[in-house]
Length: 340
View 1 (cartoon, rainbow, N blue to C red):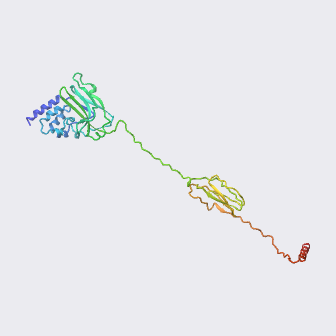
View 2 (view 1 turned 90 degrees about the horizontal axis):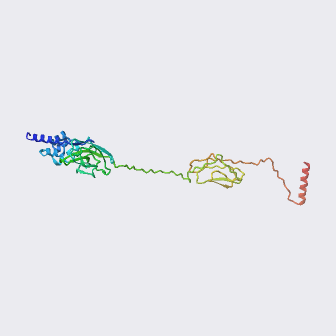
View 3 (view 1 turned 135 degrees about the vertical axis):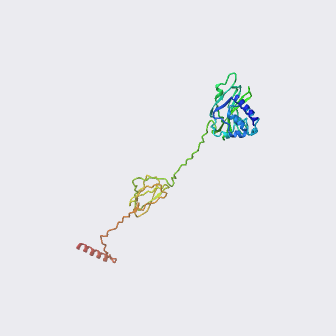
């Protein structure tokens, strides 16, 4: 271990000297225990002491460590910083949303840079970079304002690729070509929107119309005052309902003759011979399905006329014999009348 300590200290010094850049907003991945398990404890210690360091500096430390697992560390993805150590730093974005970045660059070195959506399972860029610089942090001009403060727009064609946390990151990448140093910061995010415009689903509402059948349930209003029909004897009034459910009454008196008149056009009165007088009271109905006559509305009133036998009839015997007998009888009758 004594022979190892100077090498580790030397690597740490190099890392501190070369510390240059890191994204401070949005919250980027930080080193943690999952990184230490994959990349080795000395690499973890190196990055915990200076997260502004570059990947080449990490590799110098890892080269002498037995607990460094290159495949598990995947150091060229987010400098080996692991999603498992950063589950409290997951951002939620929607397609078309603008995301503001702040980058802290402590020393300029001319290079190129970009911000891209990266698929973590394959460490590949999805689509094109969201923003890029052909010349970045130039030693000739110094660091410019738009290199440390800028915005990117979340693409609207990612589909479901970034719906699950850990599947995608927004990766800031700076390669300082003049000194061959690479810097990365990664922002974990999930995509919650479907595009720049949400399509509202229009629900079709069906309405039902209730249609009343005029043949069975039409309400026909009768007149307020019953219409009387007078029919001469020998007649009778028979009320025959039409398809509408209206109860109609007719008043029939003897002896008269008349056609039944009603405000309801669906009444037929047929004259039938009768010897009685029938009174039918008109009563309106509501939604009746049958036509019936009320037991109280049709009271048969049959006036009776009796001949008063106030006079008596006497039987007179007329002779049917000879002419002389008849003449004698007439004389006797006249005599009686004169005598009375």
